Image (cartoon, rainbow, N blue to C red; front, side, top):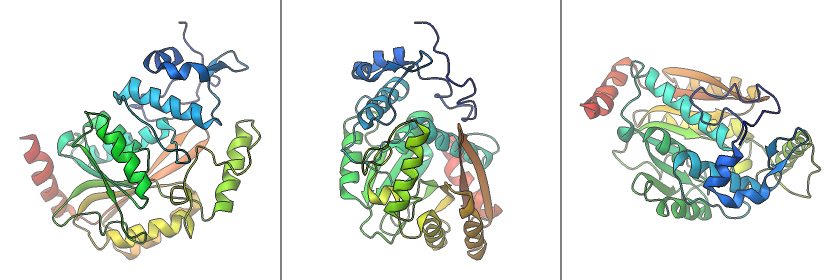
Length: 324
């Protein structure tokens, strides 16, 4: 099969250098890994192979093929109506988090199997734990307030032998809590990750979807959200700023339970309020990591309450000792 040319030569060059999806999708390879994808592949006006990214079934099958071809995840599915995430962007978060941990460890990645990550909002798709485990060997705990999402994530975990015992999904019993009820006494995490609901209402989420559909050159179908998504996955009162500020406040109550707390921040306008909250709760160090995919720009905000002495103690006990 001849090389597939990109519609825009620099389309994915701004993804992380270790991201496996920087180039165009190799649909020949993907169809070989997952033959069910074949029926969704067609030629665009540039005579390049692609799928209809407004077709939820096509996107789901593409994800299934990517996970099988690149991450050795042979069984993956989500219930209808749940968020079907774009894998290249999700992988970027994982790679930048790995860089953050390495930066905190003298430029060396901490031993994978000793690194434990908390995914706040694992969702039905379980995507961040799958990518983090298969890329770096990290172990994960994922939380969610939706029992159906936890059930789906557990089904994915149990159906893949290489994830059993390495990823755990826990139900958050109280929607107002983020860490309480999830982190067990004496339990420590090297980092937390979160892709918060960034819309403030259903109306705002639908408006954002309309823009995405227009950018794809499609007419939006009635009441349809791009890539699906339940309420808790897409919007919350006050939007991402309110959610992240609540996360910061609650993280300050468990300052020694985690090395780096992190979250995605979709809107640049959210940053000022987030930085003020971090200053108010006396975060020792705050980092902002820019990410982009095509014209979409986002960032990771990371903070820690560990001073230099506590950071050194953490590394000695959890990373250096584990390596020895």
